[in-house]
Length: 268
Image (cartoon, rainbow, N blue to C red):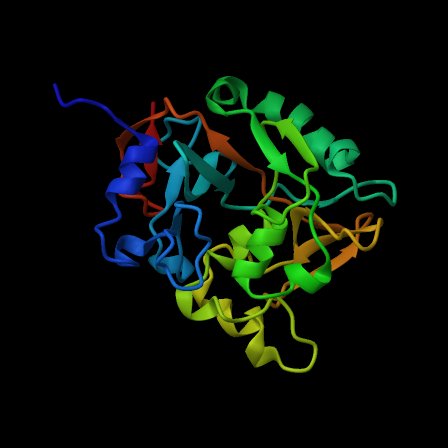
């Protein structure tokens, strides 16, 4: 018998030692403009990144509800995001941007989680950093955004839940490295912000989409990805696309699949 490989080990095995091969980047201290957190992240144009994974279904063609994409490996856990939106929703139904009490957090870790059935058992409870940051930092280049959102300069505000959303920095680092010197938003020059990375960012959905991060300077606002690809912040009572994101337990094993949309990774 071939010894089973964990899902995290499988993803890491796709990194050949050459940055960008198989669309994998190892964010060690020597990766220029990277996160420096020793994560393994997929990056590049959507059509060329084979990071699809089918969760909770054995159907030959993975249903939309079960099709996810792998953001990367963080520690021993694999972080995924739903390939398509569950629909437009308000970040919060009241004008307050505390994630812990938001209606979106309640939905994701209530109704949505329940509907996942036995898949819920494979989802790790994660300590999400939900303090967000100011637009000064989260509109900045990815390294700065990362540090203030989830890195060494991040707020200590956290919530322990199974389901969340992508971080702004997850979005930034889903682009090819040529984009990592861009800022999230530049009011006067679109060539200097993520609008210039629209075709090389696999996490870009093509419609406005919420992130988990609040604007710490404005109690009513959270950050989202605009439908033209830049990052901005807006009132939490507005409805944007929602793609649940979570970490799979480290014990999750890889079974098969190349990661293409037609041959997604399957797990056990």
